[in-house]
Amino acid sequence: MLDLAIRNAQIVTAADRYVADIGIRDGRIVEIAERVGEAREEIDATGLWAMPGGIDAHVHLAQPQGGGVVMADDFETGTRSAAAGGNTTVLPFALQQKGQTLREAVQAYHEQAEGKCHVDVSFHLIITDPTPQVLGQELPALIKDGYTSFKVFMTYDDMILNDAELLEVFDTAQREKALVMVHAEGHDAIKFMTRKLEEAGRTAPYYHAISHSAVAEREATHRAISHAELTDVPIVIVHVSGREPMEQIQWAKRRGRRIFAETCPQYIALTRDDLKGLNMDFSGAKYVCSPPPRDTDSQAAIWEGLRDGTFDIFSSDHCPFRYEDPAGKDVKGARTSFKWVPNGIPGVAARLPVLFSEGVSKGRISAERFVALTASNPAKLYGLYPKKGTIAIGSDADIALWDPEIETTITQDKMHHGCDYTPYEGMSVKGWPVRTILRGRTVAADFEVTGTAADGQYLPRKISGEAFPG
Image (cartoon, rainbow, N blue to C red; front, side, top):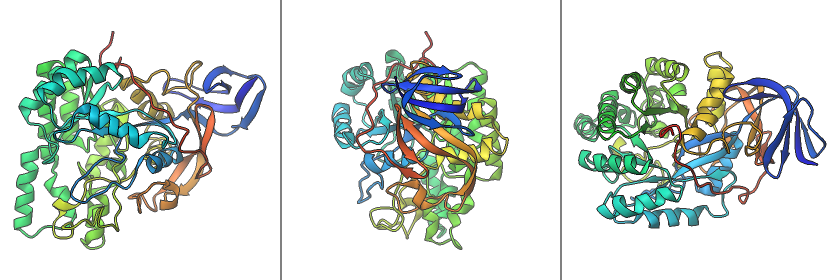
């Protein structure tokens, strides 16, 4: 007998759409047919769409900040929010702090996550201190252990790698077949613009968007691609905000380079005008993230890229800080200059509803493309496919049941996160994941989280077959 039968669902994958039953046993899909056998639990999914559970490949949880700042979400609240938004897997970052070994960073992160995850998790690494020991011993060993992707930064005083360090890191990744994620913004250009703006008395949160210019993002994207070309390594340019960096990515893709690209909901639902708040007041800090939202032309460009294949994945870059909190957005100094406002906004629960409503419901992208961007491609890119990211016999029974016709409003109470606001408050959406199923068990339904913090598992990953074919 089956553990669960989902009846009469319209199944949507990255390639197909059809009506069938889904039979689940021991957490895996074992039957897909016009009529599957009897089950201990049955769900009538008539009128609903069954899609692979979302895979959010870019989230920050419980990440050390320094300077008295504390991230709003730990693993319990962040993964709870993920489940509420139709996600069944998230990939947060284990941050190596300066002077820390990678092993120490990974161990500390596992300790924070153990027994506290509502959905499945797997870790990227963040490399901030690429010593010879890290690149020669620790990183290769961790890659063999299933930590097959890591992130590097081209800005932030405590995170930035210079060009020589980037090249060494890229070279190691090429040798060990690891996928490099790149935060591409030009550090010196940002520092220059920040100084000029502060000297002119332009210190409100809005000016964060001016200091982190599209020019700085374009230049760094070109430089990252050039380094990748020189070392012959695949990279992912993360959180791309608009047309100028996109053009660099498109140039590289046309030349056959293994350059992958990610964008996020803030770049289709927000603009830099949101950073003005109410008459250029501090409430604009709620929208401070890097790169910042741009303008309506940038939004149009992002939609073009989501349709034409420029973008491979759509992630949230969930990086939450409480607004009314001296350990969050209102940290000491933040009201005197935008440069002290913690960079990041919450979005793991809103990611899928925003893209579905603005994309699928409005006819900008197909439902199949939605699945590719939010589940199948992240699974393929980060070594989880076909265990995750599809609805197929043998795959984990990670399924989001969507009501494509439901109309609702994004509100703080629907997010179930540890943050005290959502930047998408009041946004009307059409379509919502009304049930999230993790390995055959319902973990969220009808805007409520029903699972526990012991439901999630840690997932070691394979080398990316998309980045390193064959």
